[in-house]
Image (cartoon, rainbow, N blue to C red; front, side, top):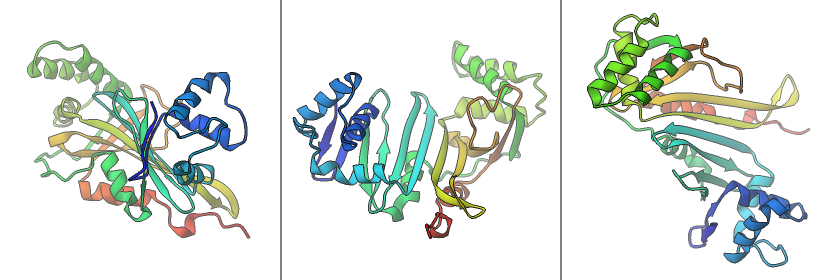
Length: 274
């Protein structure tokens, strides 16, 4: 159910509610499929009986209609995959947070000078004491990784049984020690896999073009953070398979902060109409 907090300009909306707003903004009538969503928004006062939009929606709709920068944040953890993001308009920026088991995301206006902080929060970037390990880089394939996670999912018993199952699945995959033991530890300790993708209207060879930057990493708790160098982001559907190379590089939190900063375009990166 949609809701709002006028004191902080916060909104809770599902994708289907956004679709209703986009339709109304274009002066069209929502389809029969979207009608229940329209009724929900009318019940909470975000949309009037004649389709008029509440003033509270104006900043968000303005950003959605004419975005300067779009950021997608995908985080996969214990509760499956959650989708977050940032929408930067001409005059305002909104961060939207997903929540496990909830259809709606919370849309909150933020200042553009805190975007790196917000993106770091969305992926739970945090400083830890760097673990003592001789392994800084792991090279294998996605098929090996999938086998490790499948073994973990199917394992029964305590930590020792899970570790034994994962190690058995990875043994023989061509990983030498200490990389084998390190990858087993990463799979067992993983909090989440995440990736951030930024997109904006830029310039390529003098022509207007869609520009994209992306970063993928693993949060492995006490075993640190690992940037996934390969497959290189952005990864398109069908672009990778079990034989695709997987390269993980241990990366301190401060370095990941810098990499997140580099995902955001400078003024010179935007396309400027003559």
